[in-house]
Image (cartoon, rainbow, N blue to C red; front, side, top):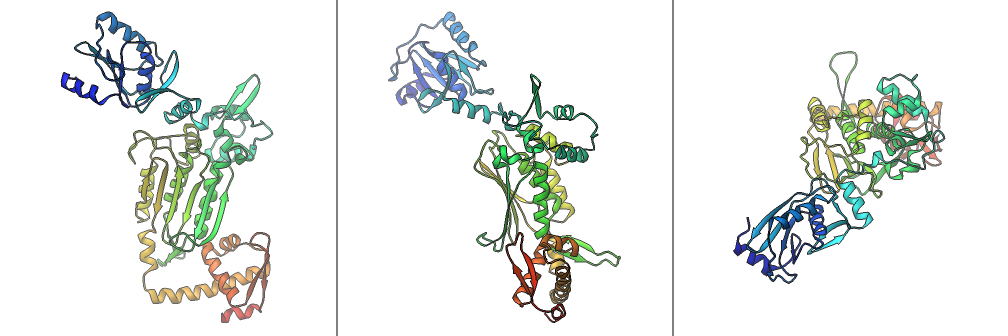
Length: 462
């Protein structure tokens, strides 16, 4: 409740972001919706613009008129009336169902003034309040069936363990990715991002950038790729990149097969990649999702719009509801928003530290450090490990030369798959073979081939 002493101070300070003076109720609806669309505020009736208390006849009829004015706004804002002598204060709460509109349009408080909102400002409020969701918007330029990839749908159905015999249109409708109007099937953005032949034709900023750095500061780039495709394809390709360059330590347990200990908790990283794709702010066109692979960490970052109320690990947050639902159908994440808890469980199982997570109003970062299990094993008996590593490297070099003699167009990824060693290990061996003058690369990385400069037998001496 305002007392007279406080009123005198307010009148002296003048109008502001949360204070408005009005002599009468003319145009009151604009001020009410302006405060409701901002942070709330108080309207002092019976006061001139320069803060002079002129007074207004306060009656039940006047209060009823003011309540009717508020009731005619859409949606109805919450107001509370308060008398201070012959000044009537209209307390307006910040709205919980923005944007609010009166007969004259949409208004918002900017500084000490109430200004009519532009089309873009109205759209921004709709977006920030979750009234418009990118994944639910129809993409009118998408041509079905010309731009539709049925193989992506069939792959999705396999992952979801659903029948392929159901008519495609029925399945897509059940996924809530299409609308049928006058016999024509229209895809929304979620449908495009999952099932288009070329999703980036319509959403170019849905690319996921992956970068491998030689140094901890990220100045020297070894490898960089722009990963495209449908969203669930993108997740798999990003993880292929991680597995290609992640180190592996081996523990011999006495069993026929040795135990492989990976540098990073793969499933936890995968969960973070899924979350970054799932919760990206796709209204923002100027930033790709990024995975940065440093010598001592993996950093995943994406652009987002921070929810008004958000507590990490507690708030159930789904920016893109349809996208989240599609991922949950193929067990890439769950609808209940338990991604952080699953990351914690995966890290615990691998004896890896929980990632460092921080966020701003516009960006979200997840930083993984190597698992303690890997570091312990990799650092055990350094001398023996070094000798073993040298011997293993020599054997790998021999095997690489053998593969190249069979197919001099073989790729690093293919060598990694055949030899069951990381892509980084393959690159290290290739670099040594090149520096020793045994091997030479002819042409570009993509489309080139390997040329053996010395006899294969000489590799044993390398």
